[in-house]
Image 1: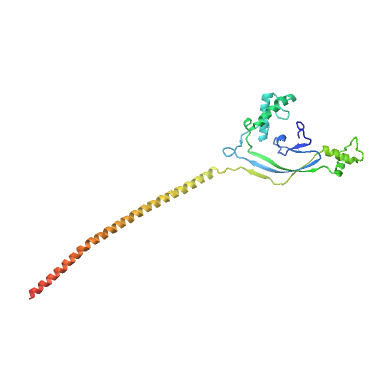
Image 2 (image 1 turned 60 degrees about the horizontal axis):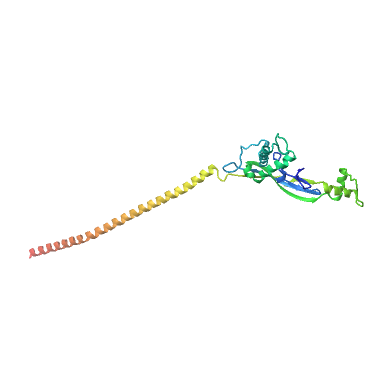
Length: 284
């Protein structure tokens, strides 16, 4: 709850784990008097990766907090800056330093904090937490209290008013007083289950090696098959060309020998005919 530094009337609150540093100004929710706020929330666990896959730093430690959170880191960053420039600290900051008085707060501490807030990314080195728990909050409101219940509350807390408006019952005046000064807050889990968000590596070393090996095997296999097919094509073309040339030579030789055979056969027949004629003449 913020007691100082606000112009609003009501209550500011935040839902956080015990080890988180609440930053109500930046992340708080508000409700005013005469309202009943129903605050439903769900828990979400977040796990982030360290470099080179993520941005969290598992070795990062804080001086005034047991668990690292971005909010606690920001407070320590602002603390060191304010102490260095103002020689004191705001009363709500941790540390064994002198608390700033009103003049030091308004003229130095708040100015330095505003400078850091305006350029937080460069002023403070506060990476995201490797492990964190967050709450998703949903709010709804209703007027509070109704007249019968307001009368009961007035009696229970013994609310007595010095003046009662004429014509207005005492419990009615008590209800008006409660509606102007009391806030009702009802917090509850919307679900008993938790949501866990885990940041995983897109590809670890094993998957990377497997992917590289698979692609290399695919490309090398395709290259070898392609080379073998080209070699086979060249060999088959060469063999086919050789067979064709051999066949042509055989046909050429065959055509060359055929006239010689015909000429030999013709000579043989002429010789045989001559012998027959010679024998016939001798008989005569």
